[in-house]
Length: 144
Image (cartoon, rainbow, N blue to C red; front, side):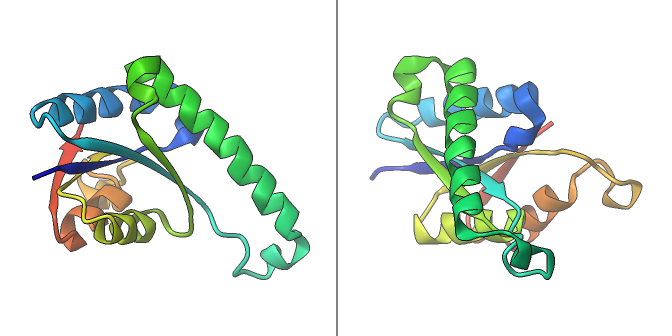
């Protein structure tokens, strides 16, 4: 049985997710046939009033740039050989919703996510990580 691991990263934080990617790779290494997918989620400006000021080509340009940044981040963290095998996913929307939707569609066995930007009310677990943990149908590994 093949295993799919979905690792969620935030490309706007440059190298802050390197340790999250490395942990996802370590976990994938526990399964010989594991597929490592890496997702980053862009905010969706298209559904708000502000979004009406942007043409579709702007979103396409942002996605293209995000792919470059995601590719560079994964290569910096895991090396070019591993990066060539990773499936890079750029989603647009709310981070936790897109992570959960992608995990569901791809039948991921595990989601790896970092605990970022915690608010006191979130008690050391960022709001996106907390929501992914709470609503995921598969196991979630939170990297601190």
